[in-house]
Length: 117
Image 1 (cartoon, rainbow, N blue to C red):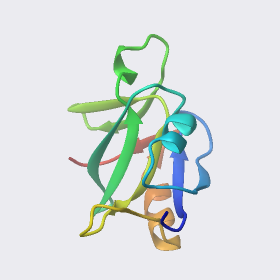
Image 2: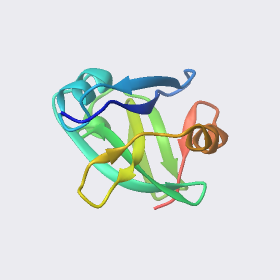
Image 3: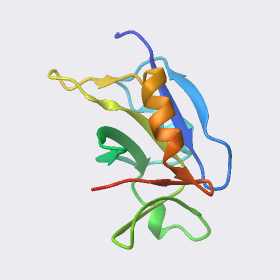
């Protein structure tokens, strides 16, 4: 098992929360944090740097889940988002640094993460 990594959980209109993912190579903690049965990992740029956004794979199809992330008018993400660093060369997710946390927080407007594709 790899060492734990730092992540940021974003939920619409709530204060983002830092968390530690004890086993980043397993889906279990991500499923629990997001509160869903199926996740997807998408890579998006936030403030010019690539990050992994782990999301509810069916978030947009579920009634009542607020929008937590946007890319202009092109894309929306619903439900909780777990943000980690992009994967390294071996495919393992990286933890967030203090600089990453500051960059991501600067791109949260009105409780919604703004990112680029």
